[in-house]
Amino acid sequence: MEHLIVDNLTMEFGGLKAVDSLSFSVKKGEIYGLIGPNGAGKTTVFNCVSRFYNPTSGRIIFEGKEITKLKPHEIIRAGISRTFQNVELFKHMTVLENLLVGQVAFTRENILSAAFMLSSVRKEERRIREEAMEILKILNIEDKAHEYASAQPYGIQKLVEIGRALVSQPRLIMLDEPAAGMNHSETDELAELILKLRDELGITILLVEHDMSLVMNICENICVMNFGKKICEGIPEKVKSDPAVIEAYLGGEEIA
Ligand SMILES: Nc1ncnc2c1ncn2[C@@H]1O[C@H](COP(=O)(O)OP(=O)(O)OP(=O)(O)O)[C@@H](O)[C@H]1O
Image 1 (cartoon, rainbow, N blue to C red):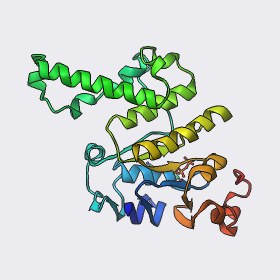
Image 2: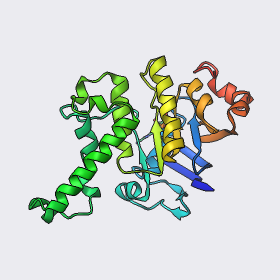
Image 3: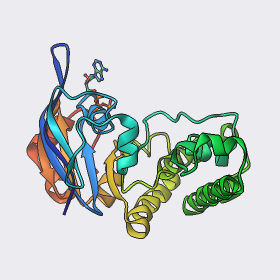
Image 4: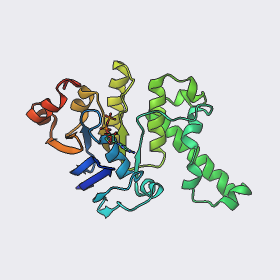
């Protein structure tokens, strides 16, 4: 079943078509890679799907419903969340608090009852904390829960960023260069984590990443972009040996 369909998407900035008539679809439970040289348009696609950008034309369909006109917070409620290229944590909060920020919006209780701290609200708070701790367990960083985010090495901060994207219980998560700045062993652990998110939580993964060995190892299908357009799509073996892909990457990153 198609989980996410990007249909003929175009995003123009002035005269520049950052995304140019792009179509691809991601199946439910798939790990799908979106790759391409610097400036190819990958992050712009994420920004269109998460509705930070208003696409110039085209449609985005999630679970059979068109989401092209939804607002960013409605996208999260619809079941899609994302991470960003640069880690943007609240550095003076603990790791756990970073996951709890913004959670009030998701509770079933209203602000007025929260003000009186009704027992149902306290229960709701407890539930949210327990869920956040569960996420930290999945990420294998529950022992860091009460430490400051800023005290963590970069690799852990990137996991906290993924944790924040998980609190809304997404059915599809878009990861924007999660391995950037990670060393080899951190990247291997990240690969295991992404597989776990898919296999154990059933989350569909859309991955933008420059680390080609990570992409080739865990993605089932890959869309390669260059200058906003799709130049190749398919399984890793096909993409790796495609002449247009090799040409696009010449002088850039090597394809593992
Ligand atoms: N808000 C914007 N205003 C103007 N141009 C933009 C904007 N966002 C992106 N672009 C341009 O769109 C093109 C695609 O950028 P984008 O960041 O999507 O590429 P990318 O494939 O994610 O690159 P990288 O791998 O370097 O992150 C670039 O030429 C970029 O300068």
